[in-house]
Amino acid sequence: MRAAYHEALETARLDVVRLGALAADAIHQAVASLERRDTALAARVIAGDDAIDDLRRRIEQMCIELIWRQQPVAGELRQVAAMLEIVVDLERIGDYAVDIAKNSIKLDDVPLRPARVEIGRIASIAERMLSDTMRAYTERDATLAESVIDLDDEVDRLYNRGIEALQDEMQADAGLVRAGTMMLFVLAALERVGDRAQNIAWHTKEMLGTA
Image 1: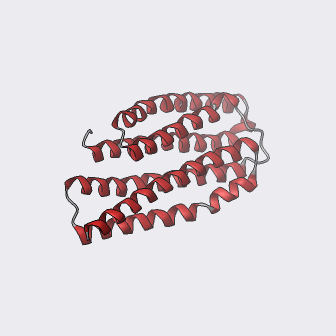
Image 2: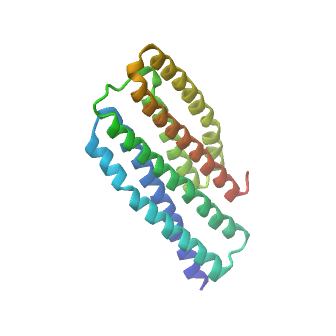
Image 3: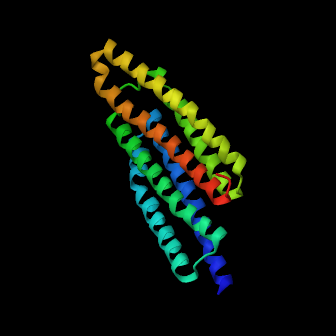
């Protein structure tokens, strides 16, 4: 029974890692669709969200069964609790990717301005945070998790700078208000990716008993 339990626990953990990979790829592709004006790629990101949602539900069901059937001890319970928290954050990251992809489609016929918003730079840092936090979870690395938490300040700084740049551009050219508003939504989505990655880092530290 215990061998089967540990096998189920490992299966759930691997599915969490897989969900992280799906969410990371969705964000990367969504930003790429915006930068390249690739509506077909944006549509694939939107369609792929069902797989992320389905995997989250599968992991949650496995975690519930692990608790119900086996009554895990302290260390194991922290693992299961962390998984339940982390999959929520990963599923929401998938939703942010969909939001970015939808705005990418709306911006298809609009010049991607303003460059000073630095969408690519913010996205790069947010993606790095997500990659590092999932590695911290996989490798049980509290130090790496802490570095992810610290990096969120940089995302926030760029986010605030991007908002200011957008406001300046829209005030200078009323024709940019529609595009600028959508870019604000993209900025907000990327800032929230950073927040969710930071959440996962905290969950990892809690799982390891270092929070």
